[in-house]
Length: 375
Ligand SMILES: *Cc1c(COP(=O)(O)O)cnc(C)c1O
Image (cartoon, rainbow, N blue to C red):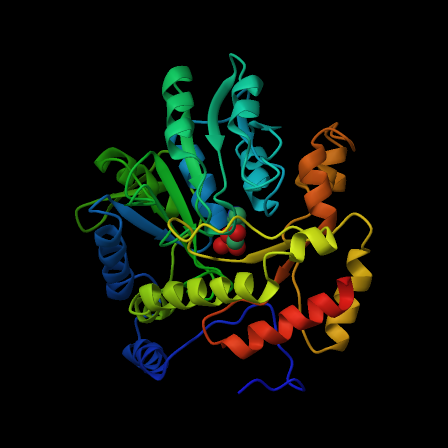
């Protein structure tokens, strides 16, 4: 039953009693840091991604940073990425000493425009970090054709894309590095956390070193540190949550798709034409429906719209403001007008509520509130 007086957030995790019990069990066991639960989660993820090696970390952000380090990227290198993402995607490039280069996005998919990526390649370009925005994958054929042609590494920021696919193949089961986030808002979560899908045993060895202070162990008391690593390991507490979430991943994503379909049905075919707002690409083949975005018409003031929705007990998100317009990026020489599509999306986008515990009445409540604001 829909309850119009009840606050509807834009997202909320679903956690079952079994998961809560398994976290309690970890706490009682006395082994809280990385241990058997982390190993079990990595094994399950590896199976999920078609047998490719997987290692877990304590955030999606450090997962991407470690991928860049494994790829040997640092000072003097350029990495091409999208201005339409959470700032983490570009911050990790700077963190390694490399230079972020942005390419504007496609106005429909909101993913990086691969023609603009190709145009931005220079002799210093070493890698591309595309984002599968809202779980809608980039054109993987075109992406990897460019990577092959220019001998570039790819770190897929698949933070939002667990369970998404491309031509029947799961994102993360093919390609180069794929980085996932288990931050609490994602389709499955561990509170905070992430994982990296790797290519081979040598990359796994490096991932484990960078994850824990650059340490290599041999025998019972043998230890050396030959590279600078950080403290990026996942705890067994978090991994227990992840194992509980993995059981529901398919069910969660199916529910998200059902709700997304109901959004389209409830908005109706004339909604865009009547309001000037834009609905997302209705991709029910590939997307995991991590978020349902609405681009408001130029005439609408986003803050006022969000307030009107809030007055009706509906919480919205906005994902994302264009990265290059943040002060730190302006300080590095980026200005207004450089990536106009990402800038327009960054100003006008809102994220409507979408999470597995919602029901179709909730969707209808959101749609009628949106219509009351825009029509
Ligand atoms: C969530 C997210 C990140 C960061 O992941 P954390 O686990 O919060 O560090 C990076 N990129 C995208 C696209 C995300 O959605």
